[in-house]
Image (cartoon, rainbow, N blue to C red; front, side):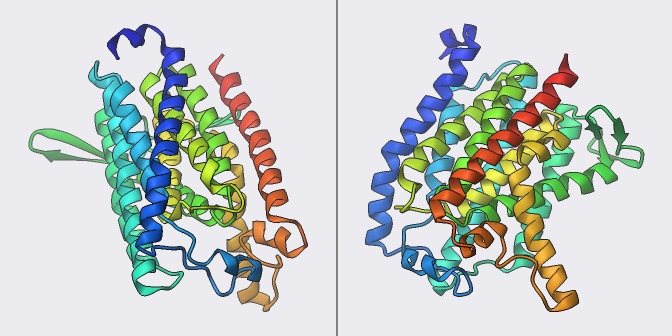
Length: 349
């Protein structure tokens, strides 16, 4: 692949194609295996009743998404200089580890035959370890500054309270405020994408759109490896949607949704677009907020704001078809992604 390095734009499109092709080639065999092993989705009893027909649909499609992404970046990623490979390694490790956590969660659901897998405390402990390790590596090895940019407003320094610890002669910087911020970003987006994964094609389509913009941002920022990674995720989501479109033949499961959310957060940190990413991934933020608002308001008043949360179910309860909800959420994501990229582009001029 060395000869392709003179054509970075072609590499990005090639990354989309290879990842998409791998996903579409591998998924049919994976679906057959899951059906033979009777590994299927456990549907929540308190969810929309029309979803009960999905009980037993093969899940853990995220395994193939991860394989496609990691194989693609291994084939196309630049291995020199070290400043280029480190960010790619970091985002790949974060994606793999959160995917592994999601896989354990999915397997737990299958074994116990219930819609709940790992306990929330166990998930949060894993996400804490992953996000803290990622943040420290990003700051100390990649040189990411512990600041966040509010477009056209200000730059907030979250490194004002930083400890330095000597680790075998290496001065390890621990920017405490930024550490907390990265944890909230990664844990928040991982769970937000997970909550969004409630309708056929919803999470896959919205992540696909958001990742196109992240690829463009990374490319504009001269971080080709990160652009290749985001493009690989885009391609994997396109390939996955072929089988996940309504009526879905397979779900990505927590293996996919948690990994994709963490990958999105990691890309935001490594491209220094933490705030912009919340605009690009605004639909995920809305989904998470709808659950928070619903739970908080119900505890305070005993009443509900939405007919059902996450709020994509609210529109289902109002009579919208599943396909209509998904397509309209894709459109909203596309609009937010355009706004997010415009904010980034305006600042980079």
